[in-house]
Every structure is written in C-alpha cells, then in structure tokens.
Image (cartoon, rainbow, N blue to C red; front, side, top):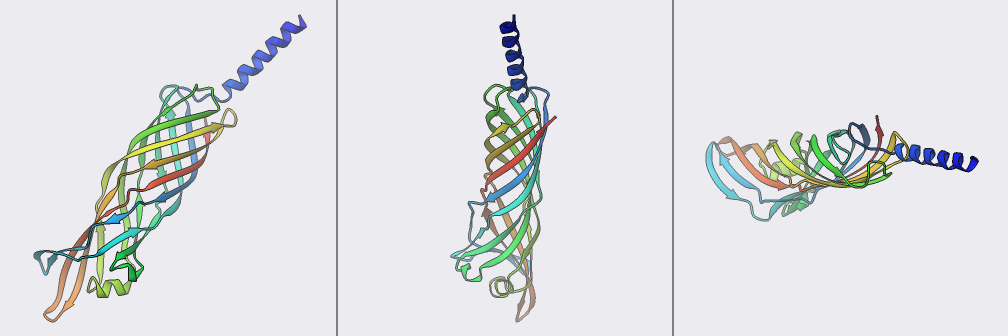
Length: 241
C-alpha cells in the first residue's frame, strides 16, 4: 500500500513539474531584453538629381556610406494560438545609427546619424512539446521601417561635398523579417530566450542643400540608396500569464 502511494505521489509530482513549464494554446507572455543591431551595410554612389530646379543625373564616383552597429532596449508581447504557433509583437526604443563615409568620403569619418523605428509582427513555430523547458523556434514576419532625426553632423563634409547647409529625408517601407531562436523555462511563469533576425532592408536618403554659387544660392538635390540588411540579436527575460 505504501509502495502504491509512493508511486502515485511521484507521478503527481512529475505531472506538476511538467505542467509548470507549459507554453500551450491560450498562453500570453511578455519579454524585455537587449537588442543588438549589426547592419551589413553598403550604399550606391552619391547622385546629384537636381541643381536650381533643373533635373540632372550626375554621379559622384567612389563615394559611399556605411552604418555603425547599435544597441537598444526591446519589448515583446505574444500569444500562443496553438501549442506550437505563436504570434508576437516586437518593439524597441529607437536606436541611433551613425553614418560613416566610405571611398573618397572616408576621410570625413562620421557624416550623419538617424534613429530607426521598426515595430514588427512575427509568427513563430515552436518545436518540442508545450511542456518542454527548452523550445527552439523559427519565425517569419513583417516590419514597418522609418527613420527620424536624420541629420548631417559633419560640417566639413557638408561644406566641401554638399556645398552648403543640408537637410535629409529617408523613405519608409514594409520589410520581411526572418527569425530563429529558443526559450528556456525556469518555472511556470519565468523564462529566458535568445533570438536572431535578419531584415533585407534598404532606404533612399534624399539630401537638399543650399549651395552658394557665383549666381546666388541654388538648391541642390542629391540622393543615395543605402542597404542596411541588419542582423538583429535579442537576449531577453520573459513572463507567462
């Protein structure tokens, strides 16, 4: 009788331990952690498209730009639609990217900066049983990308290359996101995770300069396409409800 009670007790404890790690249909969760964004950047040469309102097509040879990496605090909120499929909303405090000249512009060092906004919706497929502590996953989604605070910060670059005070604008776009990672559950509520994402992202930077010339100040418009293609890692701690 005692042996039967002991076996029953062990089975109950095992069931409780397994259930404590469940990530099953109907579960809500939130996470916070640290994003590291590492652009795999390059750009087209700077191209002058208009001088004084007259269209041009002048390409400045051996000019280009690259972006620095950036770090920021991130947050996600998710919901398990089934035991294996979850949807997740991802947002972070907008990181600031520094823009550096390449080619003949390398001598100027940092030439500008901008903040990136990229709220993202992911659909993720989790492997292993919902009761498993360790659950790897693959995800795919879409991100809305736009930039704010775009500015030229290097006066020498502004004066010698752009020929005067310059304002900057950038395109916004929808971009796909490819994601992979894993979570590890410590108990019924708390877990940790690591993920890596890739965004095939590019934007066109449009520059409007007030150039001083012998005939007066002329508006010069130029642009360049910048490929960011960031690899984004996210290390986080989460809580399930």
